[in-house]
Length: 150
View 1: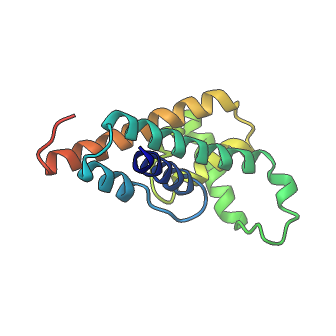
View 2 (view 1 turned 120 degrees about the horizontal axis):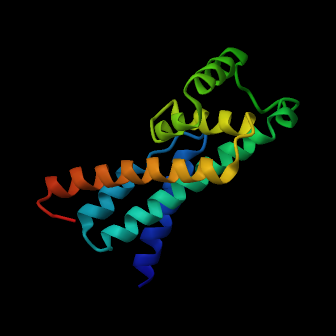
């Protein structure tokens, strides 16, 4: 039982960190747990999706409080990168959050949503769907490779 909890907790932490502006990789953790075949697939997918969505919520909160953070020496974002992300977000709107699962561009999209004061609940709903779909695809690829089916 303790092993199960630690596996889910480890996946949650990896997924959470992967969704913040910190460099981390959660797909490998999910793949390893799927291959080990000791946990419920649906629960792994839910835990990863929730962890990743909560990490995106941190990005949104950082964006929401962005003006205060500009005064902090440790908070370094290039103005041209921010401007490019804001223009892109304005062009495609809230639905660009469906790309929040993507490496490199996904985290800044959720940050910009906070900067632009997008409402939290709709943002998180779209982000959860995007991230859940990504994990389902990862699981399908991994499980097909090892000859398992959902």
